[in-house]
Length: 309
Image (cartoon, rainbow, N blue to C red; front, side, top):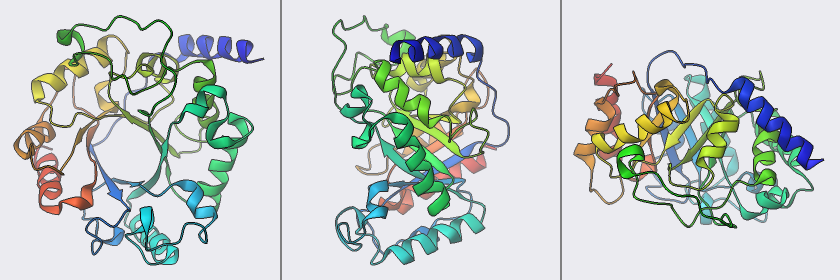
């Protein structure tokens, strides 16, 4: 059955390989870290000009067992109650800001048992019920970078001049047929293929083992591809864009490049990245990881993106 399903994925990829161009202004995505960093800054304080917020740190399953995962500690350290948390999410949505839940990949995806569920279809359906039907979020973003089984035969890596990276990120895992079936199940409920208008995004580097397979099979299934281009120059990011545009056939308008405030190392380069227009056309936008950790830094990047419009 899985062999037949994988064959379907390959056929679908051939049919839908040309990803649709995204129209409109560049998007600014703010990752709100929920672990208590700068705890006085709440979701409701997200400034105008932000288009989407991704809830990061807290896991979706915590929403289903708030006694086991109480607010005010751990990955819910930013809020003393879940009620206040979801109230602030609704306030953002009323302002026209979409709110997405981060979802991590995991080694159990390679066994088609995502997060311990019986199969990808049950998992994806439950994600939709929890995040959309129950909590009315606007979609999900997949953090694709976690450890699992690497390919038995490690592929050769492109030259730096072709991709903007020096080699594989060896902490990541292979996208085997089971792994891909997890993403395929999600596309029934999220992203452009689903017809639900609920966002499906992914965040990673181009140096993970799964990148090319995800881009090949699901280039049209994601609203945006976020690149964790932290501390990278504009010239290096242009190499990344060349690769995804020429090799993966993903339009510039679906590519979001990342900035990272913590460490205070790269504000000037991140401002330049926000203002940058790739040779392939206007990029999808900018995401700032842990937006609330350093508001001066994050707001400077936001201002730069909006000034470039």
